[in-house]
Image 1 (tube, helix red, strand yellow):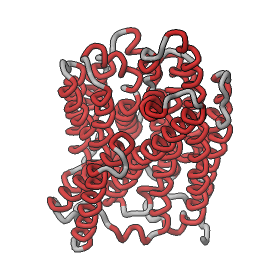
Image 2 (cartoon, rainbow, N blue to C red):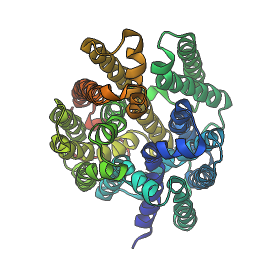
Image 3 (spheres, one colour):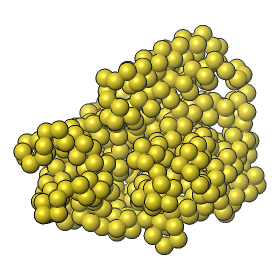
Length: 507
């Protein structure tokens, strides 16, 4: 096997490991709650700490890769992620676990941010399309298969092993990376940008934290308004700093290239519209339909397997078909998939979602590989780290925004359904709606008199389904809008890097 394919294997295994940790923890939360005696807020932070640091440090990690060397940043990031995973598994308190999860996110950002740049330097021509297809399939499968892996590990060996399993994988990736990766950097990089680093990290942290906590703290509360104000000030300051740099870590001039803008919109759209659903759909399978964590994960397999098969095909097609048709068509296909899942009813079986899972897998496969290639093929190869960092930042911000926005719509619809039923006292609607939307219905039902518990459970399930249908419809509209923008913005003539699609499309 040629060295470049061994490089691809190392990179994909590392990316699979870091993305798996976004969703793998969700199904283990009840077990963590029992053993560490955590509050519901603690559990939310176990999930959010990882996503927060991952999103807030992604772009900085890409810039550091361009400056210090992508191999160096990649290996240090894997080492940090592996050590943090060991600390997560050894946690004896909620605070310990939350801090270790934050460290995991920083390591994950380093790996994710430079992964596309590393692949880009190794592959050219049609082989690049295949390599990006495999990378895209890895991304889709990691996100979709997380509930299954987390459920199996939690059920059979204990929740700590969702973290301990990363240790041998991380060690193997470091060893493989040391031997196989070649160093590369941007020789014209302007140096370490401390003001940019501080303002960007602080601004993204405040923005993502506000999005995550808006529903619980109240969108008009002083804390949320203050976070959004701080995010606005810091991000504006970052933009002003970067515009005055000769070699910025975030080149805003890139957004003058329509294809680059279209790639970021595509990344945001697929993450906010589809990947954010992976928080809500497992709750439906487990809490409404009653499947175990393993059972819910198994039912996600059609989506992940189809995505895994389609992504390499889409990668190869990107050398023959204008990329905008793949990106736009993929987003539209996912929009159709969400409409196929829509209109779930009380009493529906999981097969109601099956057609949507299959079509959604096709759409994810069509988007992920061409998107990965597009994000680095509209800049010079030496700036690939920055470009991939920007694209991956938009992916993570998309997930955060999707979870926050869809979560707010979801909970509001559930509250409306409960209030309209007339069976829940007005003063308890919001509290019961929060319990239903967060998957804590069984705990809330303990406070209901035994003779009314069955009726209350059916009401909770009906309210949950009402909220799920609402967000599936809203997300489908978002995806169709993203598909239209991708079709208009992505242009073949904007591709400048080796391996870009070769069709000489005029517009």
